[in-house]
Length: 438
Image (cartoon, rainbow, N blue to C red; front, side, top):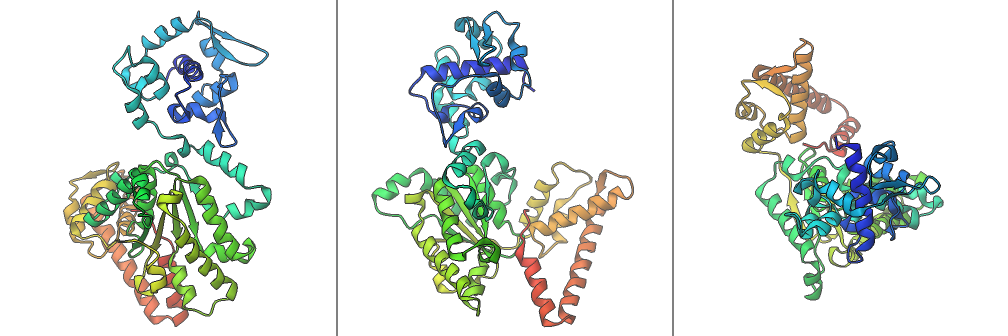
Protein backbone atom coordinates (compact mmCIF):
# COMPACT_ATOMS: atom_id res chain seq x y z
CA UNK A 1 0.00 0.00 0.00
CA UNK A 2 1.29 3.47 -0.89
CA UNK A 3 2.42 5.64 2.02
CA UNK A 4 -0.41 8.14 2.81
CA UNK A 5 1.96 11.10 2.95
CA UNK A 6 3.42 10.22 -0.46
CA UNK A 7 0.00 9.59 -2.04
CA UNK A 8 -1.44 12.95 -0.95
CA UNK A 9 1.62 14.94 -2.06
CA UNK A 10 1.49 13.15 -5.42
CA UNK A 11 -2.17 14.09 -5.81
CA UNK A 12 -1.66 17.77 -4.94
CA UNK A 13 1.38 17.98 -7.26
CA UNK A 14 -0.62 16.39 -10.07
CA UNK A 15 -3.44 18.93 -9.78
CA UNK A 16 -0.94 21.80 -9.70
CA UNK A 17 0.95 20.66 -12.81
CA UNK A 18 -2.28 19.85 -14.66
CA UNK A 19 -3.73 23.31 -14.02
CA UNK A 20 -0.60 24.92 -15.49
CA UNK A 21 -0.43 22.73 -18.63
CA UNK A 22 -3.22 23.62 -21.08
CA UNK A 23 -1.96 21.01 -23.56
CA UNK A 24 -2.90 18.19 -21.17
CA UNK A 25 -6.45 16.81 -21.02
CA UNK A 26 -8.46 14.46 -18.82
CA UNK A 27 -6.77 11.37 -20.31
CA UNK A 28 -3.49 12.65 -18.83
CA UNK A 29 -4.74 12.26 -15.28
CA UNK A 30 -4.61 8.87 -13.56
CA UNK A 31 -8.06 7.37 -13.20
CA UNK A 32 -8.06 7.75 -9.41
CA UNK A 33 -7.07 11.41 -9.65
CA UNK A 34 -9.86 12.10 -12.16
CA UNK A 35 -12.52 10.55 -9.97
CA UNK A 36 -13.33 13.54 -7.70
CA UNK A 37 -13.59 16.04 -10.54
CA UNK A 38 -16.18 14.56 -12.93
CA UNK A 39 -19.24 16.76 -13.51
CA UNK A 40 -21.72 16.53 -16.41
CA UNK A 41 -19.43 14.20 -18.32
CA UNK A 42 -16.31 16.37 -18.21
CA UNK A 43 -13.48 17.64 -16.03
CA UNK A 44 -13.09 21.40 -15.90
CA UNK A 45 -10.02 23.40 -14.94
CA UNK A 46 -8.85 24.42 -12.45
CA UNK A 47 -8.72 21.30 -10.34
CA UNK A 48 -9.08 22.17 -6.66
CA UNK A 49 -7.34 19.66 -4.36
CA UNK A 50 -9.67 19.81 -1.39
CA UNK A 51 -9.47 17.41 1.53
CA UNK A 52 -12.55 15.60 0.23
CA UNK A 53 -11.08 15.32 -3.29
CA UNK A 54 -7.78 14.03 -1.90
CA UNK A 55 -9.62 11.47 0.22
CA UNK A 56 -11.56 10.18 -2.81
CA UNK A 57 -8.50 10.13 -5.08
CA UNK A 58 -6.04 8.51 -2.69
CA UNK A 59 -8.14 6.55 -0.21
CA UNK A 60 -6.35 8.34 2.64
CA UNK A 61 -8.98 9.03 5.28
CA UNK A 62 -7.34 12.16 6.77
CA UNK A 63 -5.31 13.75 3.95
CA UNK A 64 -4.32 16.91 5.76
CA UNK A 65 -3.11 15.00 8.81
CA UNK A 66 -0.98 12.89 6.46
CA UNK A 67 0.96 15.87 5.07
CA UNK A 68 0.62 18.53 7.78
CA UNK A 69 4.11 17.79 9.10
CA UNK A 70 5.79 18.72 5.80
CA UNK A 71 7.40 22.17 5.47
CA UNK A 72 5.91 22.87 2.02
CA UNK A 73 2.22 22.14 2.62
CA UNK A 74 -0.70 24.24 3.77
CA UNK A 75 -4.44 23.87 4.38
CA UNK A 76 -7.29 26.39 4.14
CA UNK A 77 -9.64 25.28 6.90
CA UNK A 78 -12.54 27.31 5.42
CA UNK A 79 -12.49 25.89 1.86
CA UNK A 80 -10.75 22.66 2.75
CA UNK A 81 -8.16 23.25 0.01
CA UNK A 82 -4.69 21.69 0.25
CA UNK A 83 -1.80 23.66 -1.26
CA UNK A 84 1.96 23.71 -1.69
CA UNK A 85 3.75 26.69 -0.21
CA UNK A 86 7.00 25.78 -2.01
CA UNK A 87 6.36 23.71 -5.12
CA UNK A 88 10.04 23.33 -5.90
CA UNK A 89 10.65 21.74 -2.51
CA UNK A 90 7.59 19.53 -2.99
CA UNK A 91 8.90 18.39 -6.39
CA UNK A 92 12.29 17.45 -4.98
CA UNK A 93 10.68 15.66 -2.03
CA UNK A 94 8.56 13.65 -4.44
CA UNK A 95 11.41 12.81 -6.85
CA UNK A 96 13.52 11.54 -3.95
CA UNK A 97 10.83 8.97 -3.24
CA UNK A 98 9.27 8.04 -6.60
CA UNK A 99 10.82 5.60 -9.07
CA UNK A 100 10.41 5.96 -12.84
CA UNK A 101 7.63 3.38 -13.04
CA UNK A 102 5.58 5.29 -10.49
CA UNK A 103 6.02 8.57 -12.35
CA UNK A 104 5.23 7.01 -15.71
CA UNK A 105 1.93 5.72 -14.33
CA UNK A 106 0.85 9.38 -14.24
CA UNK A 107 1.03 11.22 -17.61
CA UNK A 108 0.82 14.65 -15.97
CA UNK A 109 3.87 13.94 -13.81
CA UNK A 110 5.66 12.23 -16.70
CA UNK A 111 5.22 15.38 -18.80
CA UNK A 112 6.60 17.53 -15.98
CA UNK A 113 9.60 15.35 -15.09
CA UNK A 114 10.57 14.11 -18.57
CA UNK A 115 13.75 16.19 -18.53
CA UNK A 116 14.80 14.95 -15.09
CA UNK A 117 13.96 11.26 -15.22
CA UNK A 118 13.84 8.47 -17.81
CA UNK A 119 10.09 8.87 -18.44
CA UNK A 120 7.98 10.06 -21.37
CA UNK A 121 4.47 11.41 -21.81
CA UNK A 122 3.86 9.05 -24.74
CA UNK A 123 4.67 5.91 -22.76
CA UNK A 124 2.66 7.17 -19.80
CA UNK A 125 -0.36 7.73 -22.01
CA UNK A 126 -0.13 4.15 -23.29
CA UNK A 127 -0.12 2.87 -19.71
CA UNK A 128 -3.02 5.01 -18.48
CA UNK A 129 -6.64 4.04 -18.99
CA UNK A 130 -8.49 6.79 -20.93
CA UNK A 131 -11.09 8.97 -19.23
CA UNK A 132 -13.96 7.40 -21.17
CA UNK A 133 -13.29 4.15 -19.30
CA UNK A 134 -13.90 5.65 -15.85
CA UNK A 135 -16.94 4.55 -13.87
CA UNK A 136 -17.38 8.16 -12.71
CA UNK A 137 -17.44 9.33 -16.33
CA UNK A 138 -19.99 6.68 -17.32
CA UNK A 139 -22.26 7.49 -14.37
CA UNK A 140 -21.95 11.21 -15.05
CA UNK A 141 -23.01 10.76 -18.67
CA UNK A 142 -25.95 8.55 -17.77
CA UNK A 143 -27.16 11.08 -15.21
CA UNK A 144 -26.78 13.85 -17.77
CA UNK A 145 -28.64 12.17 -20.63
CA UNK A 146 -31.32 10.15 -18.83
CA UNK A 147 -33.67 11.63 -16.25
CA UNK A 148 -35.40 9.82 -13.38
CA UNK A 149 -38.36 8.86 -15.57
CA UNK A 150 -36.02 6.83 -17.75
CA UNK A 151 -34.28 4.96 -14.92
CA UNK A 152 -36.49 1.95 -15.67
CA UNK A 153 -35.03 1.81 -19.16
CA UNK A 154 -31.49 1.85 -17.75
CA UNK A 155 -32.36 -1.35 -15.88
CA UNK A 156 -32.26 -3.02 -19.28
CA UNK A 157 -28.52 -2.59 -19.61
CA UNK A 158 -25.51 -3.63 -17.57
CA UNK A 159 -22.72 -1.10 -18.09
CA UNK A 160 -19.23 -2.21 -17.05
CA UNK A 161 -16.05 -0.18 -17.21
CA UNK A 162 -12.76 -1.94 -18.05
CA UNK A 163 -11.51 -1.78 -14.46
CA UNK A 164 -14.55 -3.81 -13.37
CA UNK A 165 -13.79 -6.64 -15.81
CA UNK A 166 -11.38 -9.04 -14.13
CA UNK A 167 -11.05 -11.39 -17.09
CA UNK A 168 -8.37 -10.65 -19.69
CA UNK A 169 -7.78 -12.20 -23.10
CA UNK A 170 -4.70 -13.88 -21.61
CA UNK A 171 -7.02 -15.76 -19.26
CA UNK A 172 -8.92 -17.28 -22.19
CA UNK A 173 -7.82 -20.04 -24.53
CA UNK A 174 -8.64 -18.87 -28.07
CA UNK A 175 -8.66 -20.66 -31.39
CA UNK A 176 -6.54 -19.28 -34.23
CA UNK A 177 -9.69 -18.00 -35.90
CA UNK A 178 -10.80 -16.17 -32.77
CA UNK A 179 -7.38 -14.57 -32.33
CA UNK A 180 -7.41 -13.49 -35.97
CA UNK A 181 -10.83 -11.84 -35.71
CA UNK A 182 -9.89 -10.03 -32.51
CA UNK A 183 -6.72 -8.76 -34.17
CA UNK A 184 -8.78 -7.45 -37.10
CA UNK A 185 -11.12 -5.56 -34.77
CA UNK A 186 -8.23 -4.02 -32.85
CA UNK A 187 -6.73 -2.78 -36.12
CA UNK A 188 -10.11 -1.50 -37.35
CA UNK A 189 -10.52 0.58 -34.20
CA UNK A 190 -6.98 1.94 -34.48
CA UNK A 191 -7.57 2.95 -38.12
CA UNK A 192 -11.26 3.86 -38.11
CA UNK A 193 -10.57 7.35 -39.51
CA UNK A 194 -8.86 5.77 -42.51
CA UNK A 195 -11.73 3.30 -42.96
CA UNK A 196 -14.21 6.18 -42.90
CA UNK A 197 -12.15 8.04 -45.51
CA UNK A 198 -12.31 5.12 -47.96
CA UNK A 199 -16.00 4.57 -47.25
CA UNK A 200 -15.64 1.18 -45.51
CA UNK A 201 -18.24 1.54 -42.77
CA UNK A 202 -19.84 -1.92 -42.69
CA UNK A 203 -17.45 -3.31 -40.14
CA UNK A 204 -17.49 -4.06 -36.42
CA UNK A 205 -20.59 -6.28 -36.11
CA UNK A 206 -19.60 -9.71 -34.84
CA UNK A 207 -21.79 -12.80 -34.49
CA UNK A 208 -20.35 -15.26 -31.96
CA UNK A 209 -21.62 -18.76 -32.77
CA UNK A 210 -21.21 -21.78 -30.53
CA UNK A 211 -22.63 -23.99 -27.77
CA UNK A 212 -23.18 -22.62 -24.26
CA UNK A 213 -20.07 -22.48 -22.10
CA UNK A 214 -17.59 -21.98 -24.94
CA UNK A 215 -16.59 -18.46 -23.89
CA UNK A 216 -18.70 -16.11 -26.00
CA UNK A 217 -19.56 -13.80 -23.10
CA UNK A 218 -16.06 -14.09 -21.65
CA UNK A 219 -14.39 -13.05 -24.89
CA UNK A 220 -16.75 -10.09 -25.35
CA UNK A 221 -15.98 -8.78 -21.88
CA UNK A 222 -12.25 -9.45 -22.10
CA UNK A 223 -12.16 -7.70 -25.49
CA UNK A 224 -13.78 -4.63 -23.94
CA UNK A 225 -11.11 -4.61 -21.27
CA UNK A 226 -8.35 -5.12 -23.85
CA UNK A 227 -9.63 -2.14 -25.85
CA UNK A 228 -10.18 -0.01 -22.71
CA UNK A 229 -13.84 0.41 -23.66
CA UNK A 230 -16.95 0.28 -21.49
CA UNK A 231 -19.12 -2.76 -22.07
CA UNK A 232 -22.88 -2.32 -22.50
CA UNK A 233 -24.68 -5.65 -22.08
CA UNK A 234 -28.38 -6.24 -22.68
CA UNK A 235 -30.44 -9.42 -22.56
CA UNK A 236 -32.81 -9.31 -25.51
CA UNK A 237 -35.55 -11.24 -23.70
CA UNK A 238 -35.81 -8.35 -21.22
CA UNK A 239 -36.85 -5.83 -23.84
CA UNK A 240 -40.16 -7.67 -24.24
CA UNK A 241 -41.10 -7.54 -20.57
CA UNK A 242 -44.53 -6.04 -20.04
CA UNK A 243 -43.10 -4.21 -17.02
CA UNK A 244 -40.59 -2.25 -19.08
CA UNK A 245 -42.89 -0.19 -21.27
CA UNK A 246 -42.97 -0.23 -25.04
CA UNK A 247 -40.70 -2.93 -26.36
CA UNK A 248 -39.64 -1.23 -29.59
CA UNK A 249 -38.86 1.96 -27.68
CA UNK A 250 -36.71 -0.04 -25.26
CA UNK A 251 -34.66 -1.36 -28.17
CA UNK A 252 -34.08 2.16 -29.47
CA UNK A 253 -33.13 3.39 -26.00
CA UNK A 254 -30.61 0.57 -25.60
CA UNK A 255 -28.81 1.63 -28.74
CA UNK A 256 -29.04 5.25 -27.60
CA UNK A 257 -27.24 4.34 -24.37
CA UNK A 258 -24.47 2.66 -26.39
CA UNK A 259 -24.07 5.64 -28.70
CA UNK A 260 -23.99 8.05 -25.76
CA UNK A 261 -21.26 6.01 -24.10
CA UNK A 262 -19.30 5.42 -27.31
CA UNK A 263 -16.71 4.27 -27.94
CA UNK A 264 -17.96 1.08 -26.35
CA UNK A 265 -18.76 -2.61 -26.86
CA UNK A 266 -22.48 -3.41 -27.16
CA UNK A 267 -23.13 -7.06 -26.28
CA UNK A 268 -26.62 -8.21 -27.31
CA UNK A 269 -27.00 -11.32 -25.18
CA UNK A 270 -29.57 -14.02 -26.03
CA UNK A 271 -29.49 -13.18 -29.73
CA UNK A 272 -31.23 -16.51 -30.32
CA UNK A 273 -34.34 -14.65 -29.20
CA UNK A 274 -34.42 -12.93 -32.59
CA UNK A 275 -34.69 -16.23 -34.44
CA UNK A 276 -37.26 -17.70 -32.05
CA UNK A 277 -39.46 -14.63 -32.30
CA UNK A 278 -39.36 -14.31 -36.07
CA UNK A 279 -40.27 -17.98 -36.45
CA UNK A 280 -43.11 -17.95 -33.93
CA UNK A 281 -46.56 -16.49 -33.43
CA UNK A 282 -45.42 -14.02 -30.79
CA UNK A 283 -47.39 -10.92 -29.98
CA UNK A 284 -47.19 -8.21 -32.65
CA UNK A 285 -45.52 -5.78 -30.23
CA UNK A 286 -42.69 -8.23 -29.67
CA UNK A 287 -42.24 -8.78 -33.38
CA UNK A 288 -42.11 -5.01 -33.85
CA UNK A 289 -39.38 -4.88 -31.23
CA UNK A 290 -37.34 -7.48 -33.12
CA UNK A 291 -37.79 -5.59 -36.39
CA UNK A 292 -36.68 -2.42 -34.61
CA UNK A 293 -33.65 -4.32 -33.32
CA UNK A 294 -32.64 -5.43 -36.82
CA UNK A 295 -33.11 -1.87 -38.10
CA UNK A 296 -31.02 -0.50 -35.21
CA UNK A 297 -28.24 -2.97 -35.99
CA UNK A 298 -28.27 -1.71 -39.59
CA UNK A 299 -27.93 1.88 -38.40
CA UNK A 300 -25.13 1.47 -35.84
CA UNK A 301 -21.52 1.51 -36.99
CA UNK A 302 -18.10 1.04 -35.45
CA UNK A 303 -16.70 3.61 -37.86
CA UNK A 304 -19.38 6.30 -37.52
CA UNK A 305 -20.71 5.65 -34.02
CA UNK A 306 -17.70 3.93 -32.40
CA UNK A 307 -19.90 1.05 -31.22
CA UNK A 308 -18.54 -2.49 -31.56
CA UNK A 309 -21.60 -4.76 -31.73
CA UNK A 310 -21.40 -8.39 -30.64
CA UNK A 311 -24.30 -10.85 -30.78
CA UNK A 312 -23.92 -14.40 -29.43
CA UNK A 313 -26.05 -17.30 -30.60
CA UNK A 314 -26.07 -20.99 -29.70
CA UNK A 315 -27.92 -22.74 -32.57
CA UNK A 316 -26.85 -20.97 -35.79
CA UNK A 317 -29.31 -23.00 -37.87
CA UNK A 318 -32.19 -21.12 -36.23
CA UNK A 319 -31.07 -17.70 -37.48
CA UNK A 320 -32.59 -16.67 -40.77
CA UNK A 321 -30.79 -14.75 -43.50
CA UNK A 322 -32.21 -11.43 -42.25
CA UNK A 323 -30.29 -11.88 -39.01
CA UNK A 324 -27.12 -13.35 -40.53
CA UNK A 325 -26.59 -10.58 -43.06
CA UNK A 326 -26.52 -7.92 -40.33
CA UNK A 327 -23.08 -9.16 -39.24
CA UNK A 328 -19.89 -8.66 -41.19
CA UNK A 329 -17.92 -11.31 -39.28
CA UNK A 330 -18.98 -14.72 -37.97
CA UNK A 331 -16.72 -16.05 -35.20
CA UNK A 332 -16.99 -19.76 -34.40
CA UNK A 333 -16.81 -20.91 -30.76
CA UNK A 334 -16.48 -24.69 -30.91
CA UNK A 335 -16.17 -27.00 -27.95
CA UNK A 336 -12.47 -27.11 -27.04
CA UNK A 337 -10.34 -29.93 -28.41
CA UNK A 338 -7.99 -31.92 -26.20
CA UNK A 339 -5.14 -29.40 -26.51
CA UNK A 340 -7.40 -26.47 -25.69
CA UNK A 341 -8.86 -28.36 -22.72
CA UNK A 342 -5.38 -28.93 -21.33
CA UNK A 343 -4.57 -25.23 -21.78
CA UNK A 344 -7.83 -24.21 -20.08
CA UNK A 345 -7.03 -26.49 -17.14
CA UNK A 346 -3.59 -24.94 -16.83
CA UNK A 347 -5.11 -21.47 -16.64
CA UNK A 348 -7.99 -22.12 -14.26
CA UNK A 349 -5.83 -24.09 -11.81
CA UNK A 350 -3.12 -21.45 -11.49
CA UNK A 351 -4.11 -20.60 -7.92
CA UNK A 352 -4.69 -24.23 -6.87
CA UNK A 353 -2.30 -26.61 -5.15
CA UNK A 354 -2.54 -29.92 -7.03
CA UNK A 355 -0.09 -32.74 -6.36
CA UNK A 356 1.27 -34.53 -9.46
CA UNK A 357 -1.05 -32.52 -11.71
CA UNK A 358 -1.25 -33.83 -15.27
CA UNK A 359 -3.62 -31.59 -17.29
CA UNK A 360 -3.13 -33.69 -20.43
CA UNK A 361 -4.57 -36.78 -18.71
CA UNK A 362 -7.59 -34.84 -17.46
CA UNK A 363 -8.05 -33.35 -20.92
CA UNK A 364 -8.05 -36.84 -22.44
CA UNK A 365 -10.85 -37.88 -20.06
CA UNK A 366 -13.06 -34.84 -20.77
CA UNK A 367 -13.92 -35.16 -24.44
CA UNK A 368 -16.95 -33.03 -25.32
CA UNK A 369 -16.77 -30.81 -22.23
CA UNK A 370 -16.73 -27.02 -22.54
CA UNK A 371 -14.73 -24.50 -20.54
CA UNK A 372 -17.57 -24.04 -18.07
CA UNK A 373 -17.86 -27.83 -17.75
CA UNK A 374 -14.18 -27.98 -16.80
CA UNK A 375 -14.79 -25.39 -14.11
CA UNK A 376 -17.55 -27.63 -12.78
CA UNK A 377 -15.09 -30.53 -12.66
CA UNK A 378 -12.66 -28.43 -10.62
CA UNK A 379 -15.48 -27.31 -8.32
CA UNK A 380 -16.38 -30.93 -7.60
CA UNK A 381 -12.73 -31.82 -7.01
CA UNK A 382 -12.21 -28.93 -4.58
CA UNK A 383 -15.39 -29.64 -2.63
CA UNK A 384 -14.52 -33.33 -2.47
CA UNK A 385 -11.10 -32.52 -1.02
CA UNK A 386 -12.59 -30.08 1.50
CA UNK A 387 -14.87 -32.80 2.84
CA UNK A 388 -11.64 -34.56 3.83
CA UNK A 389 -10.22 -31.30 5.25
CA UNK A 390 -7.69 -31.01 2.44
CA UNK A 391 -6.78 -27.88 0.45
CA UNK A 392 -4.19 -29.72 -1.63
CA UNK A 393 -5.81 -31.65 -4.48
CA UNK A 394 -4.53 -34.77 -6.16
CA UNK A 395 -4.73 -35.95 -9.74
CA UNK A 396 -7.15 -38.64 -8.58
CA UNK A 397 -9.45 -35.95 -7.12
CA UNK A 398 -9.73 -34.47 -10.59
CA UNK A 399 -10.34 -37.80 -12.30
CA UNK A 400 -13.01 -38.72 -9.76
CA UNK A 401 -14.66 -35.35 -10.34
CA UNK A 402 -14.70 -35.98 -14.09
CA UNK A 403 -16.58 -39.26 -13.48
CA UNK A 404 -19.09 -37.48 -11.21
CA UNK A 405 -19.79 -34.77 -13.79
CA UNK A 406 -20.20 -37.35 -16.55
CA UNK A 407 -22.60 -39.38 -14.39
CA UNK A 408 -24.62 -36.25 -13.65
CA UNK A 409 -24.85 -35.40 -17.35
CA UNK A 410 -25.96 -38.96 -18.15
CA UNK A 411 -28.76 -38.78 -15.58
CA UNK A 412 -29.84 -35.38 -16.84
CA UNK A 413 -29.99 -36.59 -20.43
CA UNK A 414 -32.01 -39.65 -19.39
CA UNK A 415 -34.51 -37.44 -17.55
CA UNK A 416 -34.88 -35.25 -20.59
CA UNK A 417 -35.43 -38.19 -22.93
CA UNK A 418 -37.95 -39.89 -20.65
CA UNK A 419 -39.81 -36.66 -19.79
CA UNK A 420 -42.49 -35.01 -21.88
CA UNK A 421 -41.87 -32.51 -24.66
CA UNK A 422 -42.31 -29.47 -22.44
CA UNK A 423 -39.68 -30.72 -20.02
CA UNK A 424 -37.28 -31.26 -22.88
CA UNK A 425 -37.74 -27.68 -24.11
CA UNK A 426 -37.39 -26.22 -20.61
CA UNK A 427 -34.21 -28.19 -20.02
CA UNK A 428 -32.78 -27.00 -23.30
CA UNK A 429 -33.56 -23.38 -22.48
CA UNK A 430 -32.09 -23.69 -19.03
CA UNK A 431 -28.85 -25.01 -20.44
CA UNK A 432 -28.67 -22.60 -23.32
CA UNK A 433 -29.89 -19.44 -21.68
CA UNK A 434 -26.97 -18.77 -19.35
CA UNK A 435 -23.43 -19.11 -20.52
CA UNK A 436 -20.65 -19.44 -17.97
CA UNK A 437 -17.15 -18.01 -18.34
CA UNK A 438 -14.36 -20.47 -18.89
